[in-house]
Length: 75
Image (cartoon, rainbow, N blue to C red; front, side, top):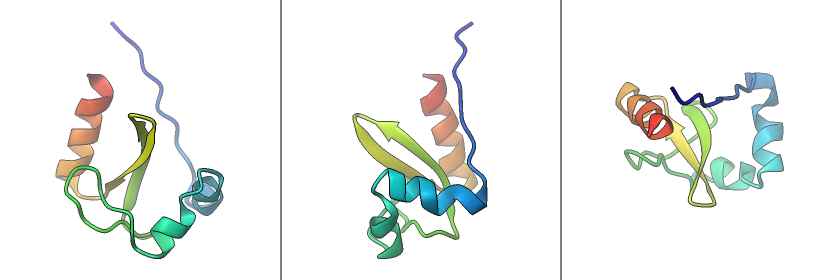
């Protein structure tokens, strides 16, 4: 069995994380999209931040998108 780590960030630290990844402006100006469904990502609907092909990607709070993220992490 392959073990993979997933890290969590508290809501209070989300903005600091996004700034450290140089992604806060793209979220704040509503230019970020969910990697899975294309929905605009905001501070209210962001479910996950994850790397894919050297890019920072986002997942919205829709259950289908979150399930796709889990599949991606398990692949």
